[in-house]
Length: 307
Image (cartoon, rainbow, N blue to C red):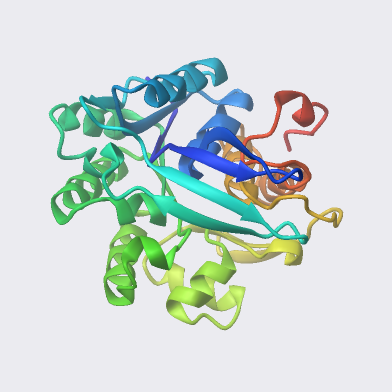
């Protein structure tokens, strides 16, 4: 049984290169994290639903190549995965466009076989999910997923939540997003938000305000990512500022937060302190943003200290 199960959606990615042409790849926030966790030597599985098309087959092949287990992937006949397009400005900041309304991942907890997926989550050492994950599901699917998180918590498993708020995914319904995020936070043991996202959804004035709000839900460990401003970590009743070790000019910030979360979680699972884990997160994210695409070549990660 996998130590960590990441839950969400893998999509077909089209990213525009320097020559103006678009290259095809695959990605999705929690899938990116799953890949980096597996590369860190953490036994990792991915939970999603895909189609029976050629692109879904390529996604499964990529997961296998990266060492990400696939026992929690359901296959929906006649369906195809979602698609997103990335354009990047001269500062490395990216803009996304999505075509995903009929993606099978949205019905993961409604397809035949969803109970087995829920059992895999409950039995895992940790479940990792995001606000994007939550935005996918209907009320029925969301209820089943939250119930699985509760059962996992009763077993002492980690439930790791990255807010990753994207207004478009919620159809502009801020009230629903806040309600669902609150339910997730009640069940989370570790929260790994990005301050910019939390400010957009909740109006938080500072990373400290984000920590204060999240701890009211009972979250015991909070890591607020703040780009070049570093990370603010709350753990064991105290707050620690962890600055980035070196500032770099990003080529593409896609996957920065996803890779940070993977390095942090991998380090914590291996016994590192929250501060050490945050430094590991900065190191990996600082390397990822020097390359195009969310999942960088393995060779580019060589030599990065684990923690």
